[in-house]
Amino acid sequence: YILKNWSLVKLGTTQKQRAMFNRLVSSKKRLELLADGQTAEYQQDIADNLGVSTAEVREFEMRMKCRPTHLEEQAGNNDGGRTLSLHEVLADEGADVEGAYASEQQEDCRRQALEEALSTLPDRERHIILTRHLSAEKATFRELGDAMGVSKERVRQLEVRALDSLRQVLSGSPLVADLLAA
Image 1 (cartoon, helix red, strand yellow):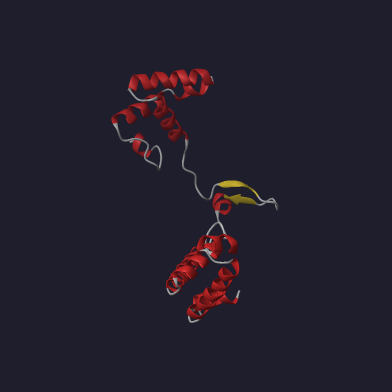
Image 2 (cartoon, helix red, strand yellow):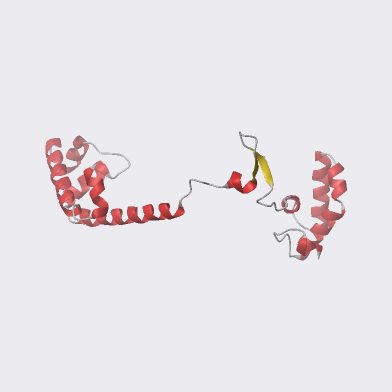
């Protein structure tokens, strides 16, 4: 009964864990009185007797010490001197899950529309847009011109033509229209 009701979180179910629980509870006072060096020795003694590692003993000991708290429990005072409960301290007023989900969905639609628009471009123009605007390291006109065997002015012209084509393809999409205005 004690094992089942010690905590809201289930502490241990294996035979070794139950034995460790009983041993730790029965000598709790002794653990509290021991110095740090002796606590490590005592944990090693328990681990040796039960055939588990000292890390498991320390973990289980921490689980026993961590008691569940109520959200209405006092957590501290605010600037006005009013006592705050734990749920007031932990509450995230800025979290708008619905808004975040809607934004994520819009971003996915925009990404899909952009991918479809990019697929309509010729390979050279798509490569220019990807390397100049959509990659982490932006390529210069000169770098692209050297790689393609054309002048940097020709790369600039191809970029302008590609951007115009993208604007035309994406102008019908309401999700992307606000991006094109910027």
